[in-house]
Length: 97
Image (cartoon, rainbow, N blue to C red; front, side, top):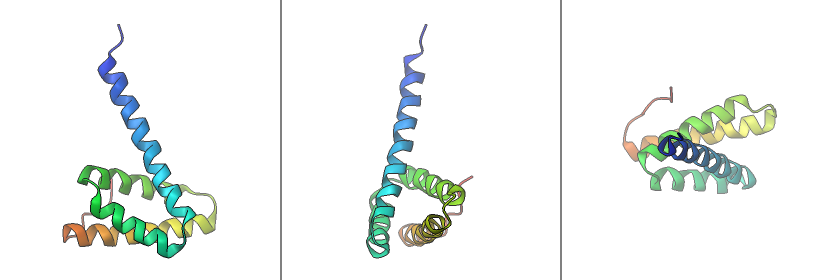
């Protein structure tokens, strides 16, 4: 018998992952200034769980991208993300596991 609860939970995780990639790709399509503004807005308006999930996704994508120019840009985005996160929570929350 199919455990629909597990199937739906797994489907939700996949969709959230796709959403994170879409958000990051949207940032890449913008100018640096536009991306920075979008990152700050995303961090300040998202739930803590969403911030944590996007933190992990951005770090993973930034550290594994094969295009050096894109990787440099993503690392800059990650730095902006962590600064925005620190401003929101008034502390450095560390890095994802």
